[in-house]
Image 1 (cartoon, rainbow, N blue to C red):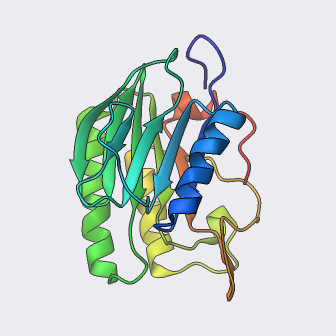
Image 2 (cartoon, rainbow, N blue to C red):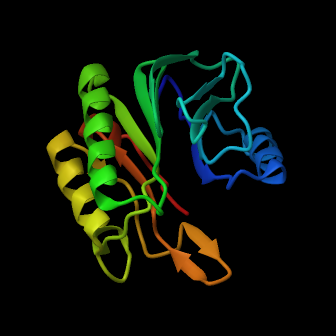
Length: 194
């Protein structure tokens, strides 16, 4: 992405852990991250550079005070839409424990938010808890198929590359954290990696 200079974006899942949220803030400072989207934050402070959803499941954080300002555009359960300079940033999180019908309704809500605010420079980042071979999973599940159709209808390009797990747990790993962008933004993205 290029806002006059290269910008760096970090995407993570904090799993409601205070230490992980502290590590996120340290990583932002140490790695000079300009913007972060964090799923399952430990807490969402009432600060201008933090935009969370209505259920405290996802947050968009602007790190660089010299960079573009971050402002809330829309909030819903499991999604937060923010304006960051010329970009619209959509952070999303959906629990793996909820049924497919609720997931499809959630995607519809996010679709409406993206349509209302899409200026052609949109990033959608988050933990969809959906698996698909399209983004490196060994198999495709029903949620993965739903996300693939959803992304096509939104005109979003998948940014994920490779087969490195985005979520690693004791019982194994998966690729469920996804990055999407409108074509204009996707053309500017370089160096996407896990």
